Amino acid sequence: MMQSPKVTLFGAAGEVTGSCTLVESEFSRVLVDFGMFQGAPEQELRNADPPPIDFAKLDAVVLTHAHVDHCGRLGMLSRLGFNGPIIVSDATSEILPRVLRSSATLQFVRVEEHGAGTAPSFEVLEPAHLMQSSRARDVPPVVLFGHRDADRVAKMVRAIPWSAWHELPGGMRVRLHHACHVVGAASVELELEHGGARRRVLCSGDIGPFDNPLLAAHQWPERAPDLVVMECTNGHRSLREKDAVRTFDAVVHDAVANGRRLLFPVFALGRAQQLQQHFARLSRDGALDGFQVYLDSGMAVHGATVLERHPRLLAPGPQRMMLRGESPL
Ligand SMILES: [Zn+2]
Image (tube, rainbow, N blue to C red):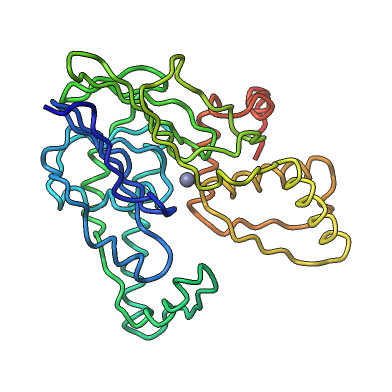
């Protein structure tokens, strides 16, 4: 008999991407996140090598949020023998099928580009130990799953209400707490029977920045869990949203005044909606003066639409705007 619930990290341990955490008790096993390894080609090749988990024996997969380093390998699940529910928040259920499909498309595009010799050229500048990896562009990219797999897996997605316990097939219970990170993001709390006692494990998922002007404040469980699995990508930095906003405003004012063009490479979920909110604010303040703003990402537009459908996920100010029939975005 196991002495305590067992937690195994198959990715995002000592690195940033590839989140995949197995939580096991005597009677049940649940996987939290199944994300892609991203970065240099040799990192990405690791995606084709699934962790040593008996996927057919998992009771459920629970997803914290729809960033690819957390959800990017879900499309492989049916091929790996998993046939249970994929538990997500309501907002994530509206985003995930689209992320899976576009991920499948992107994988095929990369194979085609590689075959045609049109793949983008790049050089790794940091970290130093990956600088050799530029050579690895000769390695053909792998296709992990196709559109049919993505659609099959999308049918396994089950949205559950926020903050309420939900019973899983093997006897564990799961509860989602709003995580102030991107639309639909959750911290996952699992309660499991072990050695005659109930134990609680909290997987934080990605969290922060906390003074986010767009999203509601983070929710925490009312009682401390027995074990916390905490992401700490930015744990060594103090991220000050106010300083970032001041810099952003100054850059935009300069561009408007001097006829410059700005290009912002951003994550489609998260930063894109935050920038939209700041541009909308500057527009309402009359500071854009005819300056045109283009958002070149269907996924980013979709993320904004989903956020507007779930005003309870918004910070108080944007939520009040929605109630007045205006969009903060
Ligand atoms: Zn994330």
